[in-house]
Image 1 (cartoon, rainbow, N blue to C red):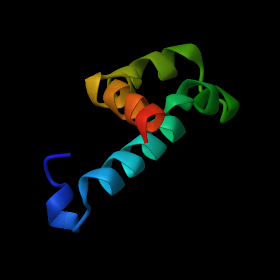
Image 2: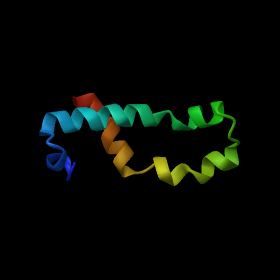
Image 3: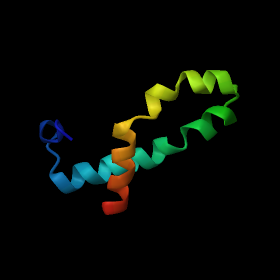
Length: 64
């Protein structure tokens, strides 16, 4: 959100995009398994997807 202005996004548009990305990424574990990754490989990627920024983005979708 701190760089939204750099991309010429107003507050509403930035929140909308963040919410859409959060929704898309939220199912990453299912998609990784669907692509054939095993649970060890999926768990190794956890920190790339499960963090405060994703949680914030998912909440933005609900408010957008």
